[in-house]
Image (tube, rainbow, N blue to C red; front, side):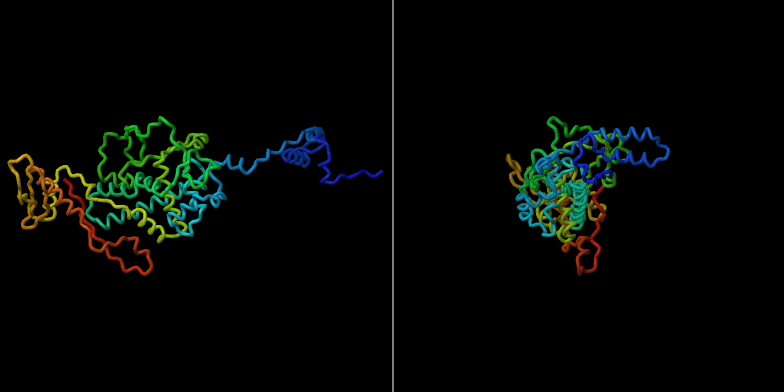
Length: 406
C-alpha cells in the first residue's frame, strides 16, 4: 500500500493537537535539525512539543474607530475630512501648495504626540528662527539708534508668546479639551497643565539655563551677556532636561494654552516656508505680524533723562543742553502750566509741558532723547530683500554708535 502524502494546505483540516507550532518554534526546530551535535532524543522531545502546542490566538480585530481611539493624534488621512481645517486654510488665505495634512500637523503640539514625525516641534523651530530674523532686521534697519532694551521689548511685542496667542484667538482656532486620534484635526491639541501646578516660582536661581556661569547666582547679568547668552527677548534660555527613563520620556509635561498657541503660529510660519518658499513666508510675516500697530515710543523708560541727554550731547560733540522756559500760565494758581524747551546752542532738541518746572524739564529731555533714538532713514531696506529676483545692488544700512552708557 502506498503512503499518503498530505499537501501543505491540508494543515488547515488537521486537529489542533496535530498542527505545527508557531514560527519561532519552527525556527528552533529547523536549527536543531541542521545542527550535527543535536541528539535524536532532543529532536523527538521538540517534535512532541510542537505537536502538542496549541496555536496562539490571533489578535482581536479592531474597527477603524477603535484604531483611531488608540492614536495620540488624528491620523494623516483625517485632514481631508475636516471642515474646520479647510475653513482655516481658506480664512488665512494660505498658499495652495501648503497641504491640509501639513496644516493639521501644525495643530499637534509635542505634548500631545511625542513622535517628531507627527507633531509641530520641528516646524515651530524653523518658524521661530524666521519670525525673529524678519522682526529683528525690520527693527534694526528702520530704527538704527534704538537701545537694546527697547529692541528686546519690541521683539517681544511683535513675535512674543502673548502676541502669537492673541493671533491664534483672532484666527478662530479652537482648543481641544484632550488630544487623541478621534479629535477633529482642526482643533489645537496639546496636553494641558495639571491644575495647581506653579508656573512661575519666582526663584530664578534654581532654574537651569544655558549660561556658563549659571551656578554663580551672585554675578551681575549685564546687557552684553543678555545679547550673547539669552534668547531673542533677552530672557535666559532654559537648559533642556534629559529624561531619566523611557517612561519619563513618554510622560511629557503639559503646556499652557499660551505656549501651545505660540508654537502653532511658529509652526505655520515654518510650514509656509518649506512648502511655498521664502517669498510666501515673508509675505505672511508682513500681513500678520508687521501689520499690527506698535507704538515704539511707549517702550522707553528713562530714569534720569537730563543726565542721559547731557552725556549724549557730549559724545556727539554738541553744545551742552540748556533748559529754557518757552511759556507759562497760572504760576500762582492751583493748576499752573509750564512749557520748557531743551536747547543745544540755537537748536531746540525737545519740548515738554508740565505742572511744575521740573516736570516740564524732564518731559522735554525725554522728548529730545526719543527724537534721537527714534530716527529712521527715508529709504529702509532690509538684508532679506537681496534674495528677491532682480534686486538692486546692496547699499550698507546706517549703523549707529549705540545707546548712551552712563
